[in-house]
Length: 400
Image (cartoon, rainbow, N blue to C red; front, top):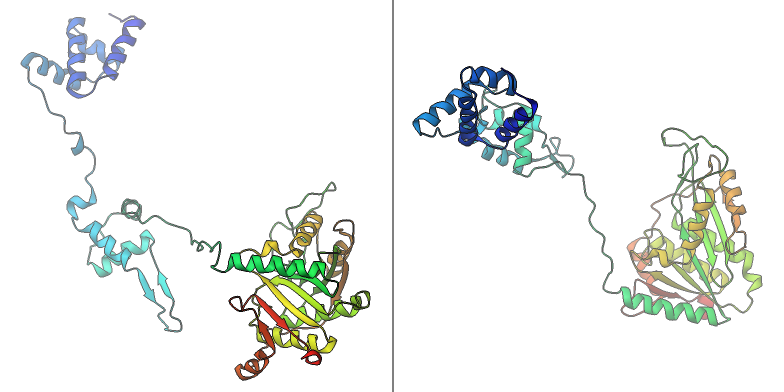
């Protein structure tokens, strides 16, 4: 005896749509209707298990229901024979920081791998290695307890400091005054990120195929550009150093720039300097303020340092020049200082090419004044009340 395909489909669909007791009763009724040899036929044609069919037949004939204990199937959890396992894992992870064994630093070292947790369960909690579950099981339990692997996260930066609005209001006023007064000239200064000199890809595009190294290795030489930008004239002066872009280098660039252009501005008595309040040129950087004061005295010109607030450096006008320069050379290889210089010279901002100069002098980091010397120098500065860090006026000795 064989079943036609349509009946097979009906029986299989009906059985698959049911579970437990209801499924067994359905199978028993179908087999009963098939008559003699029904169990064998159901096994061969429908793929049903004979043991299940017999169990269902007994339930059908007796009217009793066999309770299904699905939860008892499979292997038991480790907690069934190790009831304190989860708590012990948690206690180890929660106290997983340890000090530097050599006591050379105050840093805390953390260990949260499943392999280390398993080892510590044996060391700290006296578990036997044979009774402990494998590393994969412990890893899953760590996830169940909420100890998922996480990347090191940077703190979210502050979007504003309390003085931000006041700083921008004063900047607008100071910059407007400089742009409308013929005795004042505004200069925007900033240092660009260090440029690695090698056959490295910069993520740009070029119509000619250019091949770069497959990895960005640490090259032997780098160059750091510092730019002085005149917003009123769209003029850019770029200085390239293969040394460190320190505060001495920045003031030397300013000195070189003013020596080049001062004859064009015979009426200018004040330079308004727009810059970021970064670590190399902020108003409390002792060596920078000393050099700025010397510049003011040497040229007999007043300096007004007007800084942009933190997290708003992109408002500094010179940043527009950096954006154009980065897009201009991104599709090419910058492997030498001369290559960097040529690209910077060929770039244009509003149709004007920058003046580019390479500085070969070596600059050392960490140069600073003593506290006593800085206190004496501080007497020369006129800081704006309430915004002392952001607006500083330096008057040359000749005008005091």
